[in-house]
Image 1 (cartoon, one colour):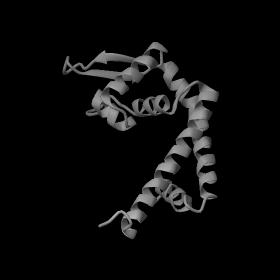
Image 2 (cartoon, rainbow, N blue to C red):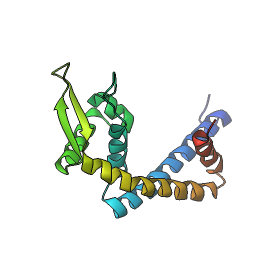
Image 3 (cartoon, helix red, strand yellow):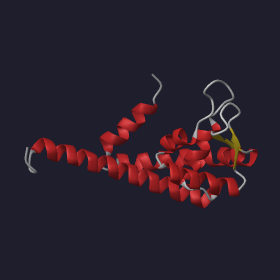
Length: 152
């Protein structure tokens, strides 16, 4: 294979398009969430992931699982949790069955902010996908994202 191999070039172009779509969507959602709710995309994602926890078996996530869910390093996730905890949106407590583990719950204020921000997130995502669909290089990817959310 060479640098000018058509398959490699096509693969690189596909990756470029996917990266471009992701960047545009994330930037659009970021602006909307910051303006309307003083939340970053990462903060919103963290609140969303943690709000889905439950008290049943395996219902609470450990920090490494949270980090994987929001696509951050464990140390960046810990800093993000600390910032949201300082804002009163999260609380941490020791795992009742393993005192080494720390769980994080969304507070009532965090749940309220998440509920207020969800329509903003969804509308910004819709707008960003609609805008991306106008670009011939991004149309297939925007359509693929749409199809992933469609009911089976």
